[in-house]
Length: 187
Image (cartoon, rainbow, N blue to C red; front, side):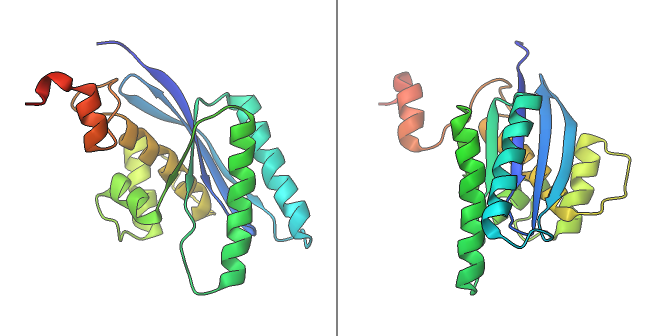
């Protein structure tokens, strides 16, 4: 079996608190590299907040050299202004990743929870407890669930792009993709 190695940067976007996390995948082992948040509430100017988000994502890319970038899709709520602000934060983070040449993948909150806990309706604490188990995180003191959400995004991306049955193989994305990869199985 061939050993694969990759670093995934996960982002939980926000204009007040943005979570970020990085995991390293080496063969079948997954380990936490870093998880934290940037608190933006002290900065009143939204454009300054966006600049901080961009600079932080760029710094993380330079420092950890991830090969993959995953971000949580905005949850569609009733407050249009909040959605616009969240979309801007997400867009700035995505732009920083694209500027660095990283492939970008976006996941819905339910997909992330489903991938990590098996339950798309899991609460943030359930996600955190499962992350502690999977990544063997002993420090149970978590001040910001946005950081654990970002790790969940990165872990979801790993699970969605790696077949458990055949390590190192990329999962197919659709029937057309499956047929293209397996022409000998089509009658």
